[in-house]
Length: 554
Image 1: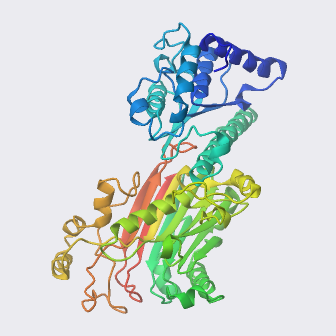
Image 2 (image 1 turned 90 degrees about the vertical axis):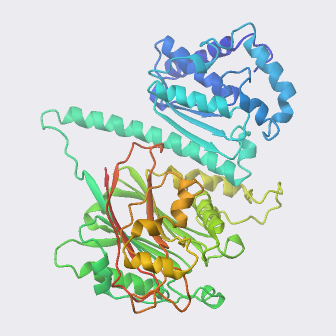
Image 3 (image 1 turned 180 degrees about the vertical axis):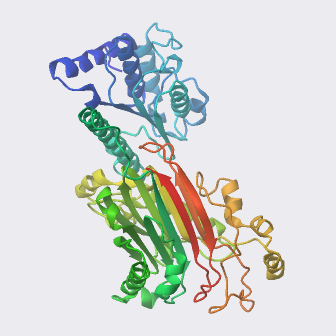
């Protein structure tokens, strides 16, 4: 709020003048403009969009709004509830006079002053960001809901990080880096969409006499295999029985390919990755038809190994292939537990596959939940600095005593963040592996009795993962197909008998979940799980493999 402003309306007028200067003097196409605003600046950006609509001026491509204080008088409940937690509460003596200065004699319930009371029909795409503990979280949520109800394409992100921190501060901690990265991703995606739309219009004009455009693929199929192999090797024939022969994309995620001990951790060139790649390749090439697959990517973190294979005809449709790994084991970062990930875009849909191995033992539910959240929040993909962005603790002196803040080390770290991609920004997210959630039975007998009856529903009533998801402690927004097979752990190796000696309660440790990100930065994606099953005949390990087959629209 400048000192000489008598009302917020004058500031909006100044913004309109600047916008018209871009359009008419500098000849900038409105579709190449993005508005960004934070706090009262986000409110100003929203009022500018309204004024552009009234003046019949073209809307920009999109607007990014961080913590918009859209009623400006700061009267909503979050103002009082969160003022002691918000990083700017110390500036309240300055903020309130500025608000009054900006409002002047205006009515803060007037649509010309507060975006909460305006009609948003016809306004550009919006990306609203705020943190749950901010003073203006109510305004941000009401703004997003109001615009969405009026038909605006709204994406939003509610975080634990204070979204209206100055950008200079935001770069210093992981949460701030993630938010700044989300903004960059959003703007890049919107600008890319604009280019694609213009190309399509041009192509349609050229093809008027040819007929309608035809999709090469209406649906793509994915086969995901997850298997804790307990340091054992399989064979091509067994693997071929697991893999769906018609799938366009085949993902094989393995856990415990080697002993999870210190000696194995420091051993180099153990050849396990090479051996498994040869087995999977042999399983795929021994088919009777002419379908050929090629390896898109392999990524390993100690005992976790994942391969992604695609039909050769799809290779030219795939871009931006990246992989990453993260440890969640010993001391919170050991690679005895953790995850690996592979992401790419195919037909302009972004897809990420995460193969995880979470904390073991029945009582460690909270540890498993913490592993999941760390993987989702800290696993990031970058074409410039993969290892740095695994978000391991920095050696730099910390500016905060909070363990959740990991600080960057140099200016090169800031440059590398330009290409960072977060897990939750993808259109499709697959999360699978030995998730280690157990059945809450006191002893084996009750579980075994239900297994003999094939009463899967009664078993699943005791499933930790299902219970944790119901209380929204983990995998919020994810889906899992109904389970119709026996628990996949713990078996006597080389048999299909549950291990009664170690008295581990049979459990559904091995799972495949997915999420279609309807608030992602791209268009909605429809996904269907075609099958979800386990194979009791594969008995090299104390786990049974689980296979899921999916189809999604492109």
